[in-house]
Every structure is written in C-alpha cells, then in structure tokens.
Image (tube, rainbow, N blue to C red; front, top):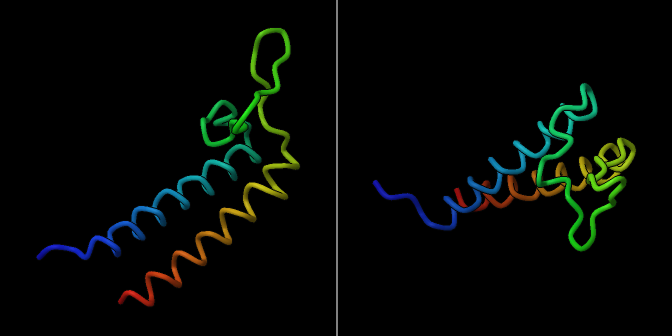
Amino acid sequence: MLMNPKKKAVLERIKNLEKAITMGREYLESGKHANWHGFRPLFTAKVRDGKALPPHKDWVKNVFLPSRESALKQAQKTLAKLN
C-alpha cells in the first residue's frame, strides 16, 4: 500500500527533528557533533585562526533545542490531523 505523500513528508520531518534534538543534547552533554552542519550559521561563520568555532552551549540550550522541540510538537499535531 502506498503512503500519502503529505504523511510521508511529515514523518520525514519528524525523523529529522528528532535527530537534530538528539544531536543538540549530545553536544550539550559531551561536546560531540560540534562541527555538525545543523549548527552552522546561515550567512557567516565565526572563525578564529582559520577554524570555524563550535556553537555556544547557551545558544544550543536556549535557542536551538526549544525551536526544534516546538517544531516537533507542531509536526506531530499535523500528523495526527492527517490520520
């Protein structure tokens, strides 16, 4: 049976958001994934001595994670509506 394309897209978004949240939490706990592309700034990177700086842990905790968690809740609500 084929899956509805909208439902498939929402499921893919949920999977990607869960991965981003996991990587953000691992970065806060151990510093892993400091160079992950999801943490890169959109326009210009902060560079010191020719190397890109990792994101500030406060930014990950107070901006990155809450925005991804909010988007995840919204995607889950959308999926519930599609079912």
